[in-house]
Amino acid sequence: MFTNSISCRFWLSVALVFTAPTALSESNTTLSIAVDAAWQRSPLARTLEARRGESVAGQESAQSWIAGSPSVGLSQRNDRGSNQTGFRETEVSVSAPIWLPAQRSARESLANISADELDAQIVHTRLAIAGEVREQLWAVAAARDELIEAQDHHRHLEALAGDVIRRVKAGDLARTDGLLAQQEVLAAKSALAAVQTRLQVSMARYITLTGQQNIPSPEPEPIATSMQQPHPRMLFAHKSIQRSQASLHAVNSTRSDPPTVGLLMRREQDGMVSRSSQSVGIAVQIPFGTNARNRPLESAALTKIETARAEAAQTESMLLSDIELARQQLTASEQGLAAASERAALTREHTELIAKSFRMGESGLSDLLRSHALSHEADVSERQQKVAVGLAHARLNQALGILP
Image (cartoon, rainbow, N blue to C red; front, side):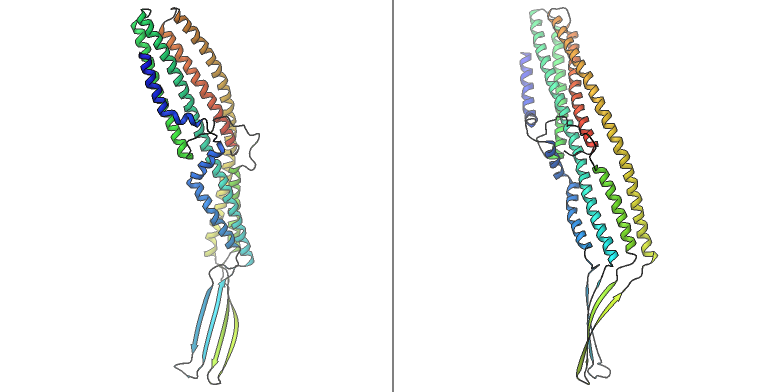
């Protein structure tokens, strides 16, 4: 009766809480789909995608010869208040700042390189989001495997408790053995509730990241044979250097404000002779550059170049370190899995022998419970090492710059 009551309450709670996670494993969701979903939910991704419009507008603006807003001027004068001969002069002008050929070429080059940098930043950001999805996916897988082992351990202890209670009622075992068995069942149930909480937390984080209830099947990714060329992190770093250099070139090409070119038309009317004359003229204003204007811009551009170079060197160093660390973690996890599998096999064999000895009355209940605990611990370790191998595969591909 003790066994049946605990079993019913336990399986009811599991059915209520874990119906959705069980269904997730049957979905056709892939890692690529999960990364796409996380990308769509990322505020940074949305910002970068929106900046594509700015980039296109910047390229179109750089192709224009006009450096600013055109202006229209109108002036008129006459001799009222003086000779009053009927003299009248009207002048209409249109002017606009115009880029010099070198200035326009430098601005166009800067706009194109800025667009390339944005594309590289988008790929770099997508790789970073893929890394977050990979981490959360394997965190859910680890919690699920832990839950499976906790459920299996709980079932074994329930079955053992039922057998012990029957033997206590038959007089084969002491009442203390029955109480001990019941305590172990309750302890396993408490541990199961803790595992449920960890799985719920992992699933909540995954859903927040991707917005999906379904998760990809946690299968180890095939390891890439070589690093992605070009690596998204290095590509973004190099494009940042190129943009900084193009910015300096644009500053050097624009030592002064662009010249202003104007077209004017003048009409003069002389009241004394009743005739008028018209003339057309061109006006040019050429500003001169000064150190007060150019030096701060040039210094800022040089600072950006040095910063971009330092960041690129650091990125390259970190990239090589991450790849080497990921390879070492993969080797360690594979070795750990081999040891954990061997240990699990030995503990299962040991538990079977202790269980047989207990049924024959040659071993005590404490020995059997301790053997079950060791076997459960070994099984959990083996499952976690399998997850560690899968995570190590994902981290190595992430370090190599492989996008799902």
